[in-house]
Amino acid sequence: MSIAAEVSRVERKFVLPVKVAEDLYGRLRLLLPGDPFQGYAPYNVRSLYFDSFYNEDYVDKMDGLEYRKKIRIRIYSPDDQKAKLELKQKQGENQHKLSLSITREQAYEMIAGNYECLLREGSELAENIYGIMVKEQYRPAALIQYQRRAFAVPVNSIRITFDSHIETAEGNFDLFSKSPALFYPADSQSFEVLEVKYNHFLLGYIKDALQLADLTEESYSKYVAGRRYGLLPVIGRM
Image 1 (tube, rainbow, N blue to C red):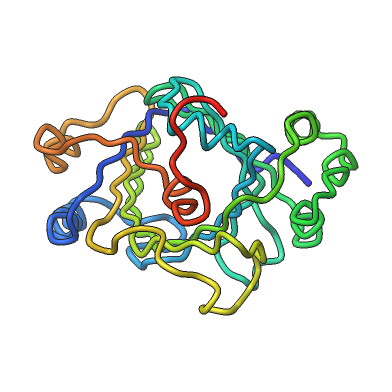
Image 2: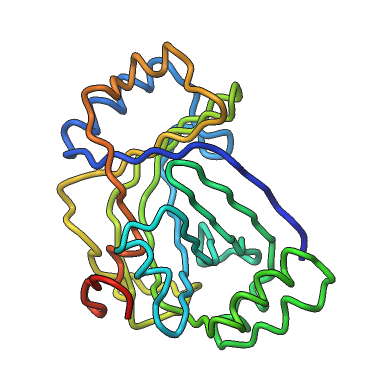
């Protein structure tokens, strides 16, 4: 187990009709390099989200709290032998994300509720995540997957992603399942989610290409969308 990444940056989200998103994607493809790992090819992202006994992370999002957090395990293929354990903390448009690389076996242990595996490697981050999960009685809450296309510009760590086909498996937490029947739509398939992430500031030519002034920023959550069938919207604290 080792720290894979620590990221602090601005994150802005926009929900776009498919036609608008595809037109924008085509314009950006003429200007920007693709993802360093996948190029312009779409790839799958699958995340298992954990939440407290009282679904406090879900409630914080529904209440629109300025500061909130998420804990998830992320993979990109059911065949992956490694996974990313991520603690994502958000305050307004600023995001701080800490990641650990864990084994497939450790992921299965956590899915079963055995978080002691986080204490075996002597990692301060692992111990912090362990403390949160035990104190607040975290357990698996929703399995979400979607298709992503990405652009990446090294200057200011700019990353622009287009996410579509958002699906959930709210009652099944087999992160490595190969069964397509496990998932069903988490939300309407009539839109895509645009995420614009950067440090310091967005370069002018990219800002002009995105035409963000013409777009409406939204606080969209794939996790909340993935729990829409089994957990009714919550207003106020439970």
